[in-house]
Image 1 (cartoon, rainbow, N blue to C red):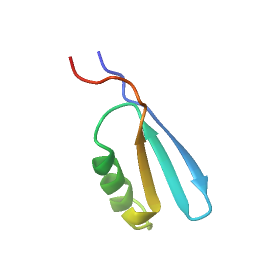
Image 2: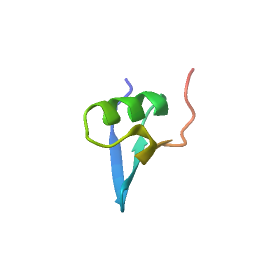
Image 3: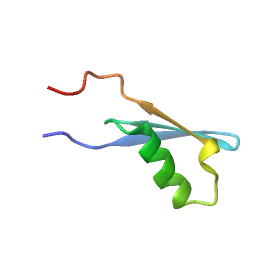
Image 4: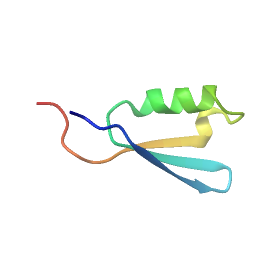
Length: 53
């Protein structure tokens, strides 16, 4: 089982989003598509955990 979570931190007009899984560019695209902000304002990061198996 792989739980999917995320947290976000706003710093001025930028948003840093930490996700529990892979796919940071997908997260950026999805958030930009659902908000009024361009993708360049989102900084996706991973949780830093080993992935795959």
